[in-house]
Image (cartoon, rainbow, N blue to C red; front, side, top):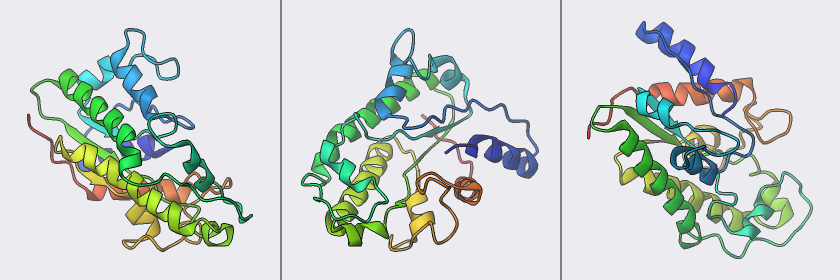
Length: 218
């Protein structure tokens, strides 16, 4: 979600008339285990540092970390490619295969709410759109990778729902409610074909804003 935090802050300031101080921890390939480390370890994770003070004081928190080395199966990597060259599909892509990832996310929420304590706080999570949708049929991995992406999104929602945290589905926004649309055709993908373009970042902000600002109450 590069640039999303600043864009969203500007929208909140304009729409709600408040001043927003941003702590932006977006990183390339930000893994869920790195987020957990930043909330857990005295020094924090190497890439994020110690985020505990910011989380303890935050009024809005958005959680997203990818499953790479955070509970995802290794063969799911065959889905993360815009190449149309035929290749072997993943063999482990069910919801059960994503349970270790879900467990990491649950631990993240446990730490967040320990740090927040008994005060109301706005917490949201997002899933991630599928920018590879047009390549998968040509590569011969469509059925398995689609099932894997759905399981990935479901794991994020399942982990969050146990804490009352709403999912803001960027998957739905970019790929449509039935997940059959190509976000690249909408101009939502950047030059690398993976990460959001400027229009994609604005769409993520719109999705977060539309979800509202109702806080969670312990």
